[in-house]
Image (cartoon, rainbow, N blue to C red):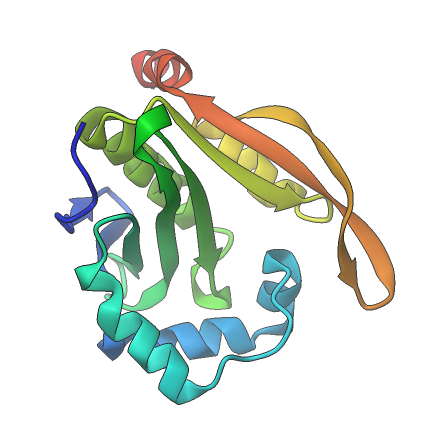
Length: 186
């Protein structure tokens, strides 16, 4: 098992995943400014430009996580990010999260980005399990995760308070064996 010190570039038919850096600030800020993106990711408030730029500047130095920009191959534009974080090397597992701005939605970019980073995590890093949480009001994302082999494990009731309403979080994971089954049918 290796760590996340190496920051790969992963290329698919629709997207290229490459290391996130400070130059991606404008694209990521635009994606996060979209009210629907903020809702679907459960993001309350802004962190500010200086703090966000510093965050992006330091992603390449992290050995316990992988932050990749999602680039739409058709336009060359950064449309979001795909992240493996909360790494637990003793248990060969981590968390996955993804954000796709309006410019990248509805065209399969998120599904392909998910498959690319999950494949990298399992096949190259040697992860056994990758987990995530998706809010119940985001069935489109849940379907994309299922296409990459994620299986629903449970529900965290009333996990997010969004505009005065409680929303459940669906807990999902993909095991290395799930991934191998998905890969063999793809």
